[in-house]
Length: 81
Image (cartoon, rainbow, N blue to C red; front, side, top):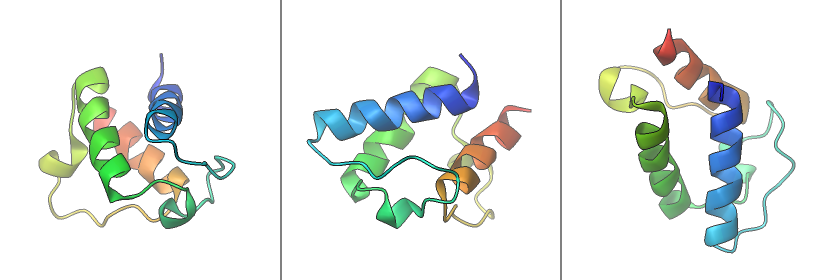
């Protein structure tokens, strides 16, 4: 599974488990408008670290936090290179 697909799958899984209503997952969707709360994002980042075997937030502490879903996905894709 590629990085983008894994991220989308994990977002959907976390939203379902936390009983959150997701907005349509487009690249320009603001993360704060996604329907996920801070606990959901913490769970998501933890799961992505396990699934993708990387944590770009720890690896690049100077990076700006992603604003949109597209930024979030690109952040992980760039770290995977």
